[in-house]
Image (cartoon, rainbow, N blue to C red; front, side):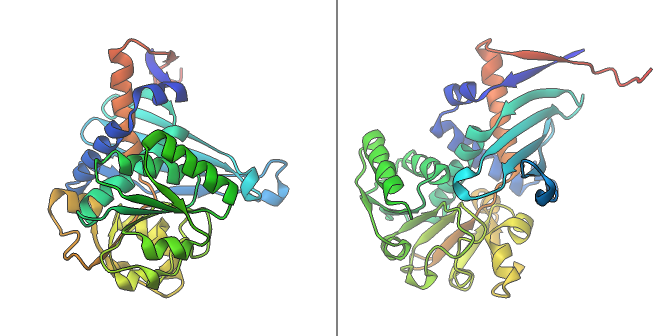
Length: 332
């Protein structure tokens, strides 16, 4: 028999700081540049929702960190209108040599935090050093965690410019950021108003159509695109130096995939992966006037890096909740 950790969301919240998550994301992306962190193919399960009492879909993702770890992430979604949507994410972490499932982690909070942290890492390596105005499109979890991670970088920030289609949610979001971080937050009536003012633009929207007019971006702007794959104006790919979380992932699942489907871009617009930029293998920003874009759709190795860290902290503090797993593969 083997023992598997179960790490619930509250332990994730208690043990994972924004600063640690940013560090972990930077490290694992750098590992990916040399193949020491890798991503497998992902797959969607989309049953015939018309025949289902409770319409659901799911995404399965696989990745690993050499030489010791690999893992599977499953995200289950409800279908329906935006307000009714729910999601549940689970990461199962395996020891590569033994195939023992070392941890099962409730990964909703983990997933949003590592998403925000990855966007902040991209900003650290791609934005102008003197960029001090952050624009935010969207007021959901992706935007909240992204703002937290950006403010954990230690950059000087003059103002956050915010747009959300819901004025009520925008007001709550702005008040929360002001209270927790003491940063000036100004809300605007349109996404374009934010895009034209931002020096660093975070897109965390759930919309399937372009959220803003890319031609309004000022020279030197950096965009960390963290939301729905359809949220970007396809013209941005002809304007910006595009850095992907991983090229194959951007082409298949990222914002770039939508532009490719529309005939507005091709795979060759990807100048580098984020890991290559961090490792110094390929350049990121090449001038103060260049527009840079980070196309993020999420990679399993991001979750695995956090999962390994959480497992170590749980064992270190003797907080473990265990389940017994029979590792005898004999069927009779």
